[in-house]
Amino acid sequence: MIDDIRVRSLRRGRPAIGVAAFCLVLGFSGTGSATTLQDMFNGTSFSQDGLEFSNFAPVLANTFPTGQALENLLKTDPLALFDVQSLDFTAGKFSHGWGNAVAANAGNIVLDVLPDNGSTPGVDPGFRLNSANEWTVLAGNIASAQLSAFAYEVARTPASKQITSAQIGQSSTIDLVGPDILSLPPNFALPDVAGSFALQFIMDPNSNDVLNAILNVTLDLGVQSPSGVMRFSRFESWSGFADRDAIRVVNVVGVTASSGGGFTMNALEQRIDPPRPAARIPEPGTLLLIGIGLAGITCRRRTAGQ
Image 1: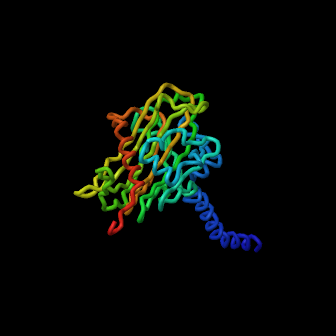
Image 2: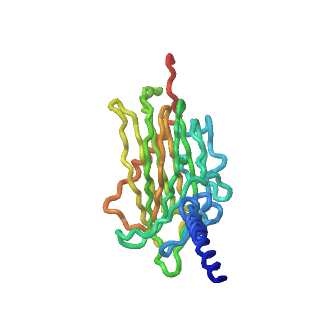
Image 3: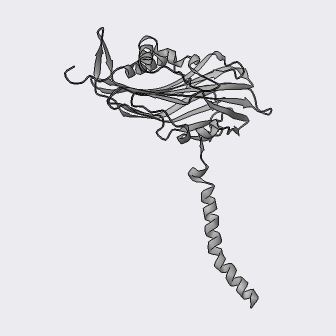
C-alpha cells in the first residue's frame, strides 16, 4: 500500500519536474546568457582557437571637442578626429553624441564569439558586435554624429603560433539621406550624407605605439546627388604585420548624418590572424571619404527664406 502511494506521488511529480527542467533550460539559453560589450568592460574575457581576448575597455577621451571647437576641427582637419591622442587608456569614455545623436550604450551591444572560419586557411577566431540600434544616428532637423571607441588585447597561448594579421568589416543600413545639396562659401557644394565607419588600430600592448601605422578601415556612405542617393560600397579591410605574441586592438566607430538623414551600423565584425584576401581594396582614398562625410555634420539644413 505504501509502495502504491509512493508510485502515485512520483507520477504526480513528473509534470512539475519536467516544467522545472524546462525553465532551467530557458534560464541558461537565449538572451539571458548573452555577453554584452559592457560585460567585457567589467572584466569578462574569452579564449578561442588558441587566442585569448581580454582587457576590453572604453578609450575615448572625456575631453573630446564639442560645439564650436568640434565644428572648427571638422572644417580645418577632420582626420584629426582619428588621432590616437584622442584616446584615453586609463579613464576613457565609450561614446559621445552630437546634435540629435545620443551616446551608444555598451550594455545593449551583444558580443558573439566567432570560431575559426574553416573555409579559409589558417586559424582566425574573432567576434561580432551586434549593435541593437545603439550605433544609430537619426539627425532630424540638425546634422548629427556619434563617435565610440574601445580597446582590447589579444595574446597567443603557448600552443598557438604568433599573431600576424587582423581584419575588420561592418554590416549597416542607410535609413535615410536628407534631400538637400547644400552650398557653402566660397562656391562649394556639399550634399547631404549618411554613413558610418570603423577604424582598427593595431598597437603594441606595452607602449601603445601603433605598429608601423597599421590601420584598417571599413566604410559605408550614402550621398545625395541630383539623380538620387549614391552609396559607396562596404568592404572589409585587412592588414598583415610582423609576428607578435600579443597586440592591442583599438576600434573607433563613427556614425553620422546631415539634417534629414539617418544611419545604423548593425554589426561590427573582426578576426585575428585571417589570411590575406584575394583582392585588397586600397585604404588611403577611404580616409578622404570619411573626412567628407564627417564634414557634413557641420552643416544644417537651411530654413525657408534664408
